[in-house]
Figure 1 (cartoon, rainbow, N blue to C red):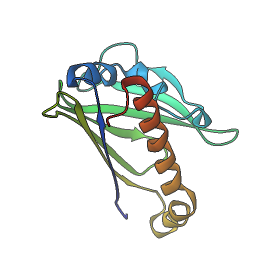
Figure 2: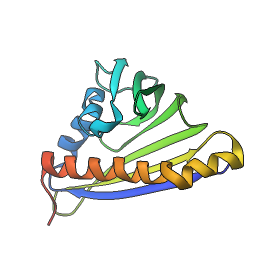
Figure 3: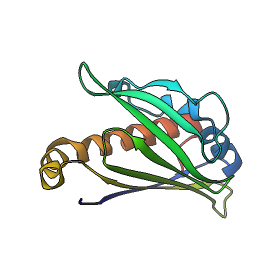
Figure 4: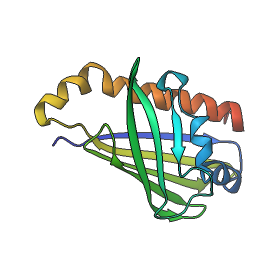
Length: 155
């Protein structure tokens, strides 16, 4: 299994408690997911985030091909960070750390660190190089843009 790391940083001109409240509402995941993923929540997103929460949804991995994804919120420190981990889905390993810090200006510095691995060992590296890595970059670029539209762009 080859473990990959994707890390993104973003500063939002909003106080950490406001940004945290947005992310602590799992139903908001739909807003920051690109439409081409066909994101469909199925269960578990109707209440504020808590450790042990199971969220299920479907995503379109290719046009017309849907994959069920089960995520567990494995750790939460309100206002500071949370970790979601795939329990079932397209990856053989997925762990996503979301960290939130106040800046001296009262803005929010966000860190996303995703550790992930694809199934099928060395053969899984072929789709990773061909499209998975770029798809993840696309998802985070969409998310960055959407968050800037929601909270403003730090400038």
